[in-house]
Image (cartoon, rainbow, N blue to C red):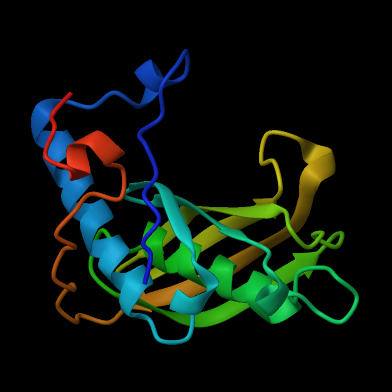
Length: 183
């Protein structure tokens, strides 16, 4: 199985996400645990979902709309879109261990064309005890309102289960870092 690795953000917006050294370690550990979740989930792992950003209460993931994820009309199958939304929700809530979906609503605004990359951003909007509510935005370009294809809300409950073992690599590592070259 090929595992996709995404580089850390760079450029003008990168300074907005800069973290202290100890927070960077926690960020990396959270990302590694989410990466394990994405690669070991038997239902969603064949979709090739990629982690782009993860921090407490927030996650951004994506998937390529491949022929296996399309409906007969050539656009993303609703089940594949919902699965990406659910994994984004689970990733945003993973800072406190596994969170189980208790309710979800996803409104489809437009079709996502086959062959495009679909992004999902999940943001926690409320938490009370072991229950949380997350806002989901999905589209081919999350910065462009005309490219948003679905919005929704997922509710869940932290299960009190132990977190998964972290992946042995960072999903944000560059190819050089993965090959042992710190450059």
